Amino acid sequence: MELQKASSVSLAEVTKQKEYIELTATVLRARFGHETPKAFVHTYGCQGNVSDSERMKGLLAACGYAFCERAEDADFVLFNTCAVREHAEDRVFGNCGALKPLKEKKPHMIIALCGCMMQQEHIANRIRKSYPFVNLVFGTFAFHRLPELLYKVLTSGKRVFETDETKGMIVEGLPVHRDRSVKAWLPVMYGCDNFCSYCIVPYVRGRERSRTPQAVLEEAKQLIADGAKEITLLGQNVNSYGKGLQENINFPELLRRLNALEGDFIIRFMTSHPKDCTKELLDTMAECEKCARHLHLPVQSGNNRILSEMNRRYTREHYLELIRYARSVMPDISLTTDIITGFPGETYEEFLDTVSLVREVNYTSMFTFIYSPRKGTKAAEMDDPVPYEEKSRWMRELLAVQEEIAAKRTASMVGKVFRVLVEDQTREKDGLLTGRTAGNVNIDFAGEASLVGTFCFVRVTQAGNWILHGERVE
Ligand code: SAH
Ligand code: SF4
Ligand code: F3S
Image 1 (cartoon, rainbow, N blue to C red):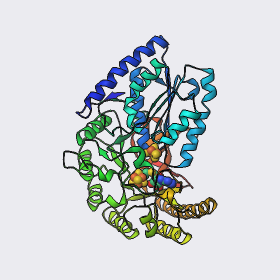
Image 2: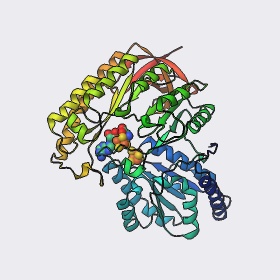
Image 3: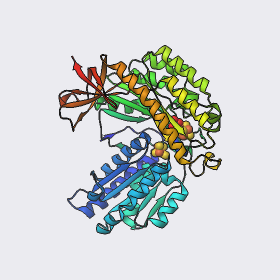
Image 4: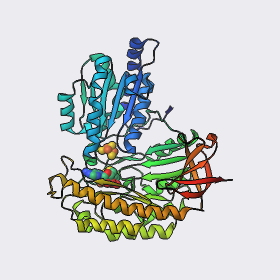
């Protein structure tokens, strides 16, 4: 656990939460005596949520909790939820329902739900009515207030609901508890102002706000000192970093400053919105040796009418021009994307424009989603005549194309040498390590466990369906 330096942003709030940490710790000591209370934190959704959970775990550790891997062993269960698609919400409801018998066996157990789902009124109401065993519900704007909310639950014995969209502030200077030290998440901005017509994120995460460059750089330095070898900068749209800050700074400038920090590490970032992806950003990536040659640039659709209905504010042509430019300044760049199939009113012909774009760009990998209506968004009001089965069929067609592209790409990597960050020991296959290239491709190779967390050179010897196999070269 590390303590970040406090910044001037909402210092009063930080002081208040630190007082609640002390109060909660005292209550827990009185209840648990010499035993350490255990918390189970489960995170759904994107890396932004993972990063919030790391901060909440920092607060819980400061209150005196240790962490466990199963809800069964926990005195405090926290689900940090995601609202991006219906499927994500269904999983939370299912897993939450499964806690009921546990709570009956262990009545002192505190169950808390937080995150994007809880920021929606209809969801919080459903929990209030149908899940009476849930003790604490709070939204994305209140995650740093966990010590205060937990204290209220512990001392009042009442259910606490805190889902007001009071203000989206940035709180610096609270503890962070990270599970991994080699790969680190570093939020640079929060919220989203883009209102893509299908997306719930701007409603549950509030308006865009950036952390100061000082706060980002301080945290990066700390991470590097703690052994991080890969830092992923996070934001729903990192390209709008800097808006609203006193200092006149944009995302490329932030990248340059991070690149100038001492140490052997790589920088990644996600996500970049194509409408704000500038040539300056691509030039900066090309000139910064620590920036991974990888760009996640979600296109969503290859058809201009659908892009306009999605309120994405770029065209297929503009997107392809960005890709062309990116490849001209970084010939080895690896590109990945997100795609939605079956947006309301999309026709098969329009979907085929996405397929042709996917072929043209030649992505390393992509995340594909079937459109899921989100209450309160503009797209949820649109006519959506195509049945789900049909949309699934389009999706399978798209995946088959991507597999064909991926097979060609991986075959072309055989015989070449790549620098990889060794992420893990692949447990099932003893003695094998997993490394990830700067282009975000995994390679398995034989090596000592002590290599985990270091950079190695690996020659690809064989291309499997999902993973490449290789051998270490000294
Ligand atoms: N801010 C990021 C994406 C955040 S959500 C960006 O703009 O790229 C991650 C992905 O989920 C999106 O890129 C989109 O492809 C998908 N997604 C978002 N809302 C969705 C919905 N209602 N149905 C299906 N997929 C959705
Ligand atoms: Fe959602 Fe669009 Fe914002 Fe991404 S940019 S989070 S897709 S509204
Ligand atoms: Fe999900 Fe919220 Fe992230 S809706 S994708 S956890 S911002």
